[in-house]
Length: 285
Image (cartoon, rainbow, N blue to C red):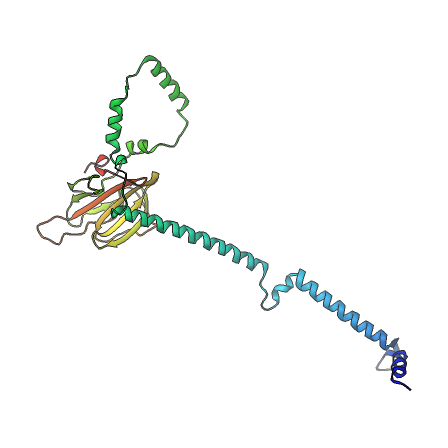
């Protein structure tokens, strides 16, 4: 008998799968099988098992228990954290550049437009050129506008803000060197007593509090309407960068003079929208 005939006969042979009761050998279940049927059943079962496993892994939360597989929530949080870190990095770069610009202006490395320094003087010159006499119709128009705008809050201009600016005196003492835009000296120097307290001129946030080789410790405060106040020659700062301060709150103390016959010097300056302004126009020292 040839090999092909033996294989064909083997495939046609029938077998019986019988399940018996072990106690009395009673036949409970039996089925006739052939090798092709067994092969088909095993192959079909294996295929169904593979399909079911693939479906469970792909479409059910059980896939998160597979070692090395990250969950969808974890991926979402990772993307969100990456975006947040990128935003914080950009904000940090912007803040650092802002502080570097302020420091460069304070150190005199950036030129300042002289025409915008003495605002009070320019305002007085403009007033002399304009006829401000009030007529009959002008008074009626003013009254109508005041009635219409009585409850209409509008943002104030830079000139209006400076004109209405009321600042707390930062330190007790006498001014020995004033503001001079021509020589690019944008601060005033005040002779005080040893250990004199330095106070904030207005509510704001500390944006700079570091040591300077020339002026000891320097504190810079950001106020509303882009107003910045600078306090120089401090013994040690009581406020750190990022802290909020209130009007009249103590920031530090003036650095004591090393010479017995001289008084400590405190330097102070004001900036508004990137332009220096004379502190003596707004503070009675």
